[in-house]
Amino acid sequence: MKNYDLIVVGGCASGIAAAINAKRIYPGMKIAVIEKNPRPGKKLLATGNGKCNLTNLFAPEHDYVGKGFASFAMQSYNPERVVEFFEGLGLICYSDSCGRVYPESNTAASVVDSLRFETDRLNIDVICDTAVTEIKKNGGGFTVNGEYGCKKIILAVGGKASPSQGSDGSGYELAKKLGHSLVKPVPALVPLCGSAEITRTMKGMRARDVVLTLRGDKILGKTQGEILFTDYGLSGIAAMELAAPAQKYIDSVKRNPFTYIDFMPRMTYDDIVEYLQNLSNIKGFCNMDNFLTGFLPKAVGIAICKAANLYKADKRIDELTAEEIKRIAAKIKNFPLEITGTRGFSNAQVTSGGIKTDEIDPETMQSKKCSGLYFAGEIIDVDGGCGGFNLQWAWASGMLAGELKD
Ligand SMILES: Cc1cc2nc3c(=O)[nH]c(=O)nc-3n(C[C@H](O)[C@H](O)[C@H](O)COP(=O)(O)OP(=O)(O)OC[C@H]3O[C@@H](n4cnc5c(N)ncnc54)[C@H](O)[C@@H]3O)c2cc1C
Image (cartoon, rainbow, N blue to C red):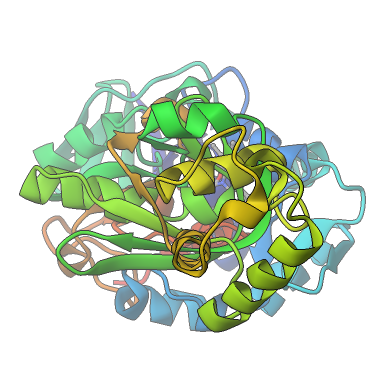
C-alpha cells in the first residue's frame, strides 16, 4: 500500500487546482493526483475551441445553478484571484469586452503546461492511466483501489459531459458508496434537438442576435445571442444555454417545451409591421421568396412565411394583405420550435445536476456525510453558462477544497 496525506481523484481543472493549493498551504504533505487518462488536463485542451476561456470577470454576478452554495468559494477565489494564480505561473492573460479571460498565447495547451510545471515543481505525484473504481473509508482515512492509502481525499472527477475526455459519471457511484445522493445529471451547454423538418430547411443559417424564450407550463429560460440552424435542431450559444432547463422539463413532465425565437429583438412588433409595409411597396413586384431577404437569410425568411401559413413561391409581395403582413411580423417576433431533447452527454460541455449541495459544507467543500472527503468542480450540482463560468467554478471550488479545512 502506497500512503499519502492527500489523494486527489481526477487530474483536470478542479483536481489540479486543489492539489496545487493544498501543497502550497501544507508543503510537508505527501500528495497524489490519480487520473484515468494517460495525461492530466485532457478536457482543458478542448476548452474555448482550443483557446481555453479560463474564467470570466463577471462570474460574481453570474446566475449559476447553485449560486448560493457556490458564493463562498467564488468570493474566496474570485476571477481576479484566479488570473493572479495563473499569472503567478507565468501565464499572461487577457480579457475581452464580455469579461472572458484567455491566455495571451490563445492556446489551451499553455494552461495545461503551466499547471503541469507547477505540480512538478511542488513534487506532487501525478499517477496516470489509473481509473479509481473503489474508495473505502477505513478508520481515520481511506483506501483507494485497495492500492493507495490516504488521510484525506478530494473527489474532482467531473460529471458526465464529454465522456471521451474522461468524465464518465463514475464519480457519482464512488460518492454514492460514501453516503451521498444526486440531483439527476442532465446534459448542459449542448445543442437542442427538435422540429427537424423546419430547421433542416434552414440548415447552416445563422441568426446573429436573437432572443430565445423557452416555455413549458411557464417560462423556463431566456437567452440572447447567436443561433445556428442544423439538420437536427438548433445550435449556437443562445440555444445551448437552454439545454439543461429543456431536458429537466422533459424529464419531469414528459412533455416537450417550445422555444420561441425573436429574430429582431431591437425592433418592436409595430416597427416591424411598418417596415414590412414599406418593403411591400418597394419590392411589391418580387415573389415571396425574397420578401425578408433585406434583414434575414433567405431560407429563414421563407420558413417564417411558411410558419405564418402564407408561403406560396409564386405569390407576389404586393398581393399580401395588411393582415397577412401582421401575421408575418408576429412570426418574426415569435417563431415557435418544439424541442424534443438535446444532443446528449457526448456532445455536452457541462453537466447540470450532480452531488447535492446540501450534503457539502460550502465553506470547506467537505462532505457532511463522510469526514475527510471533499468535493470539487463539476461533480457538484453547480453549473453556469458559456463564457468561462464553469472553469471559474472548477478553479474556485478546487482551491477551496485544497485548503482541507475541517
Ligand atoms: C468541448 C468543451 C469546451 C469547454 N469550454 C469551456 C470554456 O472555454 N470555459 C469554461 O469555463 N468551461 C468550458 N468547458 C467546461 C469545463 O471544461 C468543465 O466545466 C471543467 O473542465 C470541469 O472541471 P472538473 O475538474 O470538475 O472536471 P473535468 O474537467 O471533467 O475533469 C475530471 C477529470 O477526472 C478524471 N476522472 C474521471 N473519472 C475518474 C476516475 N474514476 N478515476 C480517475 N480519474 C477520473 C477525468 O479523466 C478528468 O481528467 C468546456 C467543456 C467542453 C467539453
